[in-house]
Structure formats: C-alpha cells, structure tokens
Amino acid sequence: MQTWFKFKPTFKEMIWGGDRLKTEFGFDIPSEHTGEAWIISAHPQGESIVENGDAANVPLSQLYKMIRPYFGPGKNQEFPIMVKIIDANKDLSVQVHPDDEYARRVEESLGKSESWYVLDCQPETRMVMGHHARTSDEFNAHLLSGNYDTLFRNLTINKGDCFHVPAGTIHAICEGSLIYEAQENSNVTYRVYDYDRMDAKGNKRELHLRKAMEVTQSPCKPDSIKNEPIEIGKNYVTYLVENEYFQMRKYEVNDVLTMDLGDVFMIISVIDGHGTINDNPVVKGDSFIALPKEEKLAIKGPVTLLIVEPKAEKMM
Ligand code: ZN
Picture 1: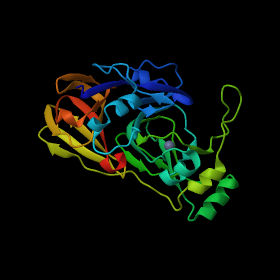
Picture 2: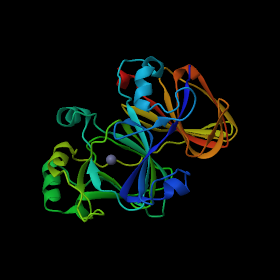
Picture 3: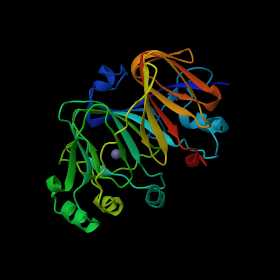
C-alpha cells in the first residue's frame, strides 16, 4: 500500500498577494496577486490533490476517509490540520479566530489556532500580535472608537522567527512577510480592521466586529518562541512549536539523518535545498505526507524541512 504521498497545492488570489510563491518556490500561480498556497489541505474551499502513485488525483479529504486507520489512532473522519505558505505583498487585515467551542456553536466548524514560521521577510517587517488593552471592555471601547494605532500591538520580525497564535489572538501578517502556517482545518476568520481598502469592484471587505469582540482574549501579548537547535552531527533539529493540536519542527540536514515515525502521520515540507527522503527525490516547495507504516525517514541533504506532526488526541 502507498505510504508516501506528494501533494499539489491550491492557490488563493488575494488583494494583498504577490508573486513570491512562484519566484521563491516555483509554484504555477494563477496571478501576481497570489496570497496563499494551501499546500496540505482537506478543506472544501480548496483541497490538495495527491500527485504520485496509485492514489494520484485523489483529494486529501477522500484519501483520509479511504485509508483512515493508516493515518494513526482514532476514528475522526476529517483531516485535522491545514498547512499554507502565505506571501504578504501588502498588509493582511487585522483579524481574530474563534476557538473550537465557539466555532462549533456558531459556525459549525473547527476553531482556528495557528502557528507561524517566518520563511523570509524584509528588514523592519512588522507583525500585529495581540493588543494593548487590559480588559475586554477596554478592547471593545478602543475598537469601536477606531483607536487602532494605540490598540494593536506591533512587533518587528526576523527570518526564522516562530509564533504560536492561539484562537482569540488579534493578529495580522504584514507587508514583506513570507510565512509558513500550520493550523486547524478551518477557514473561520473575523476581520476587525482592513485599512479601509477597496477590492477590485470598489467594495470594502466585510468586518465582523461583534463576533470578534466575543472571541478576543484580553489581555493578550504573545511573543516569538525562542528555541535553540539541537546539533546531531552536521545536522540541526529545532523544536519550533508545540501546542494542543500539533508539533512543528525544523530539520536542517547537511549530510544524512534518520528519524523514526511514531503512531501518527507527518506532514513534511521542503523549504530549502534538495535531496532525498527514503530515496524519493525532494526539492524546495514540495510537500508530503508520510504514514506511520514508512517507519523511518532517511533524509539526505543538503535540505531544510519543516515537519508538522498532529497530536493523536485530536484524531479521536
Ligand atoms: Zn489568522
């Protein structure tokens, strides 16, 4: 049975998108305003499709249902994680996402906690991360009176920074950022501020202030996560993020590295270089799913990988 799957992404054109998904990763993007590559997605609004082997042309949501037990323990029928690369040629709207309980009740969806790895950015690139209000009342008052400059908390980011953005965190990815994002399988976003921009038809995008005020956490000031790489021979492994949904790790493999798979599948994205994994050729921009039956991953570099491993508890 096939246990190694390569995926073809879906692209999303956005008013804030650019062309770096093509220039950096070689993706065949639909226009110079492409904001997102959904590189591993089983979401009905844009699925990744298997590219290799007997399962070629099967969408990920179907693959998951067809061979569910091989992905890991548990019985859930919805693929739990979504992974994107985001090219912010302009600022994204300031937004917040609901948690699972709120999203289930109000949107019949999963909530959205997300984690980011900064693939690249310009000098002095900003990010909105949290806000300066001490209480929900204070947050609501500032939001409704449009005191955005004093309310939103801006950070300067650097290449290689990593953030966890739990549901309820006000945030915005800003101009000049190229971001790798792993998140719950959800597309529920409440926009709180969009810089009064117009779309191609001259309309402003909808804001969702009431829901945003209901889900925003106060106080909320998350910072980047600092983790030192672990040296293994000529290679480096960094534990970037661990949250209740998944773990994200970075592997900089300069010669050869072997790792064991656990009980749960892994999402593997090549963010730099080229090489092989279990003798399969891999190159920057590729994304794969390895099932536990692969047992080991023998990685030959020089290649840099981001690996997202879901938590078994979230697959029950
Ligand atoms: Zn978001």
